[in-house]
Image (cartoon, rainbow, N blue to C red):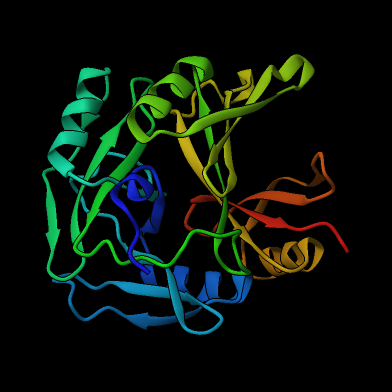
Length: 261
């Protein structure tokens, strides 16, 4: 199925772990999330792909380049029809470019950007617009995208203008402030909130949630494989469960499980 340009814009297409120890990280996430892995031979540098069931690639793994001035992190790649136009739009709205344009033959062109509050993400113009139709996440896929920032309302306006994300529900979380959720055409895909005071020293960032069958079993696997639980497991409105964690290399990530049927 060919995805129209309007559907490509703003669609999260890929996720990538930039780490300090590829082998250790590969073992950790295979054990914790249940992925398999395969090397990506077309990359000039060592690159590993994580696959969900059915050997469908869902994320990548690489050593963090020395020129990337940030701690190891999970990055998201968001689809755009024309890379240069998207980059120019982002800069007009107060964002910045953080890397040159990267071109990977047969894969596409990409560039790391930051939003006006400093959170990093990639824009990605795929070599082909032939993408599978959008649908709810399957086990092993990214199911939620969460921005911790310094001005959630301004961030929502920025991403809505750049990617066409649609603001939806806003949840009052009391002393923690408001949680602003947003949709793609097929449904809700993420939320944004202001960082709490205890995260004052943490730069604004995107956190990726991956879907697992059972949150308590996942917590056990995180602990058994050298990870650290940062928050949860916690039930969220609607009955789903989440946990925020850190891998052995110090990278924040999160897991999500659907409520029991």
